[in-house]
Image 1 (cartoon, rainbow, N blue to C red):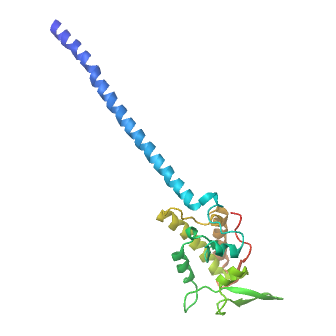
Image 2 (cartoon, rainbow, N blue to C red):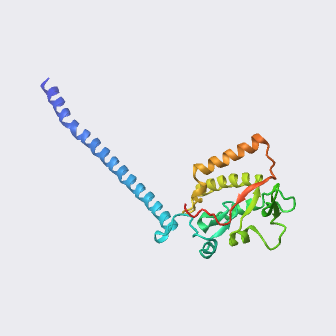
Image 3 (tube, rainbow, N blue to C red):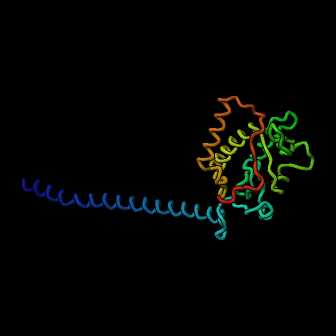
Length: 223
């Protein structure tokens, strides 16, 4: 009986080292996970820092800035984006999507969009002259000169839909430094687009109605 008691006493003395081993192993696992989590967090912070450096070199104005006037935008290497209807730097411009947009219009010959200038006003309203019929003048030349132009209801809807596609494309591609122009990512613009499309659907507004005014000088220079 004494031997059994002694054996149990020895067993009780051997138990703490086993528990200590488990505790030590658990601490090692927790430490490794903590180090890995810290490494992952630092890596993520470095990636965001690199994006910020790419988008904001030398503390320059934010994001999709292209100056305060059209000549300055062109000198900065910005391009006139037909979806955003504004000048954008390369990292805010999706050339492939713009090319698709430009050939998604109602024209039966080349799928382009009709654009118009308001030449004069009559008692019934402005008299519109198609820009596309002028072989010299395009919306790009109008943009460079800071001239206003007009587009249709269908164009306006396409502008909204392609802007939303651009947001998804830039997010899914996960390319460093690619940004959607900030004025088109705000809820106010999304609400404007959704309300506009709903109104067209509910009222049956003609798609070829010329009702979208695009200013040539009042650009998004404050965003």
